[in-house]
Image (cartoon, rainbow, N blue to C red):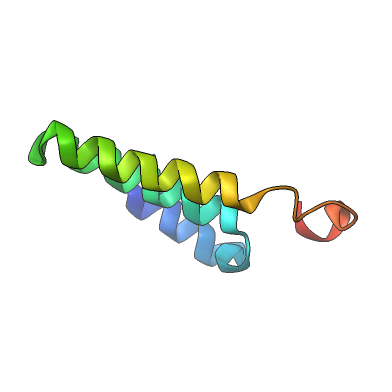
Length: 68
């Protein structure tokens, strides 16, 4: 699955309100650009994506049925 497929899936399933899907899209886009960027830029962007994922925390507790 490439980033365009992931984006289409997010749109088709109204996933724009699901932040973990947006993190997956960012990760896929970074993976696709890996050969075009420096190692330092890759690691910086990867760390940023990882921090975004950690910032999600446990926001879903209590509303699991609504969001998953």
